[in-house]
Length: 357
Ligand SMILES: NC(=O)c1ccc[n+]([C@@H]2O[C@H](COP(=O)([O-])OP(=O)(O)OC[C@H]3O[C@@H](n4cnc5c(N)ncnc54)[C@H](O)[C@@H]3O)[C@@H](O)[C@H]2O)c1
Image 1 (cartoon, rainbow, N blue to C red):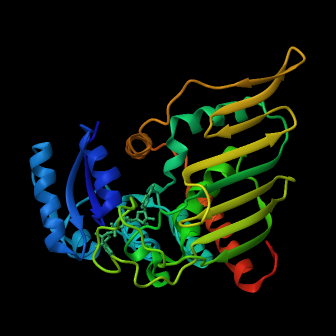
Image 2 (tube, rainbow, N blue to C red; image 1 turned 180 degrees about the vertical axis):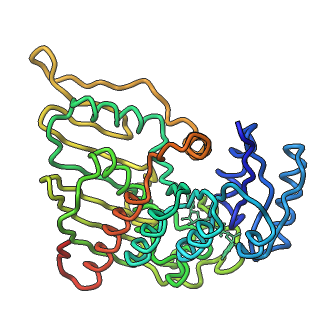
């Protein structure tokens, strides 16, 4: 098998937590280059990576363009803030490399359409990092659905409702993030429920958004996701919503209710919940269950499977697809279709009207 020369664009928190450690586990991957404007901080990460894994230090470039000009790469991970995703992914496809692009694919539908068109013309893989599809428990639920055990799926609910869990840094700056919890965690909740339900075509969307708490009510000792990049460490800029909710109708008759918050004065529950209800059975993620009827009585099955290491499975899937040429589980078209729904939720919230698609 070929040893892949891999670059990482944007070496912040998700790169450190998910991409680097899992590339390092692959014998067929060499992480050879980093591209990030925060060169000094990232040089430190490059040195540490080399030491931890006993490999040559990845070369640090101050931009993706510099990296592509100097390196002959097979693949890149793009782990930068949301609004930079499309431009960097286009550059990567122009440089003829395979791409693992962090979620959300984009924050605007026009940009997603442009990237989809470009990806369709390329023979390189563009995989959108919809990490929760790679949870082992989600994989098991997908098997239940695909076996027909739910019958006709006609209603679903998905949510992540944190009492407090606003990420620090650029996430709350609309100009960089393109949206609050909707773009950050709503994309995960929506994608997982929609994928489990069989990726139906959207028909109409009603959404609301609110900034109920914002950067008020600062807490001591609050554990949350922290961006590694400099700026907005105390969420001084808070121009996004902190709550989003939507009611989404699909052409096949399925309806999905979505609720996500970074901060909400209710019980703490930062887990991703999905419930799908069908004519023959229902499923739930967290708690993991299948609700059916057997031998004339109601039965509840609780599959014995852990969440597992989703990032490890995601990164392995990307590398395996690059090596084999197989199409990834999370396709560019699906990444674009999720952005279509996210954009419609935003538009509906702004206009106060249902959006027909
Ligand atoms: N899949 C998941 O579960 C998951 C979890 C958290 C974050 N994310 C996604 O990962 C991305 C990064 O989030 P993060 O928390 O790591 O942020 P971060 O701020 O910690 O890291 C972003 C990095 O990108 C660099 N950067 C900014 N603009 C750049 C550019 N034009 N070119 C190259 N580098 C650039 C920054 O200097 C920084 O090092 C976001 O899109 C976020 O939505 C995904």
